[in-house]
Length: 174
Image 1 (tube, one colour):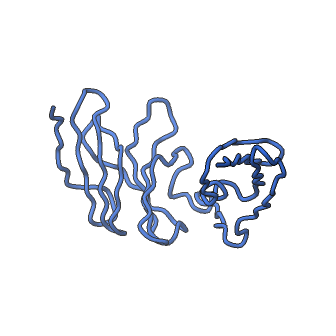
Image 2: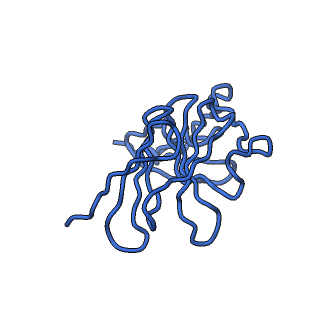
Image 3: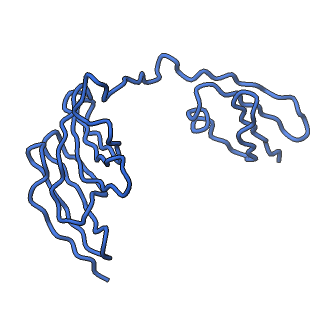
């Protein structure tokens, strides 16, 4: 039984050399828009080249957000985690770009990213946000963990799309 060798080239540089009886190309091709795939078996080194330009028209177009015309998220913050609910609604956890800064800020868009609202997370000190799960444009949960002592945490919930309110304490158990 012949084994096939798959060499994946990105430009002139070989990225992978895989040997397999069964190769799924979709996952490899999806990584790069332009790659050349060369197949050969070890007895016959005649390459069969596939030149792939995976859906140029189907590729997503990136739109710049958070510019000077959109100052809702200050430029000194960066996104730690984002959760999209739909093509219009997305939530993100933000961290200030400073030494030893904690993740304690939340932002939300309800119009596909055209504008973002910026909210503080009012959890227990010294907790910081570690997780985010949004249900819709108004409801989201934020999980927080203790940054000083071992154990403990809390779950915060917002139901009005603003600063998370009532919290449930979660204690570490062994």
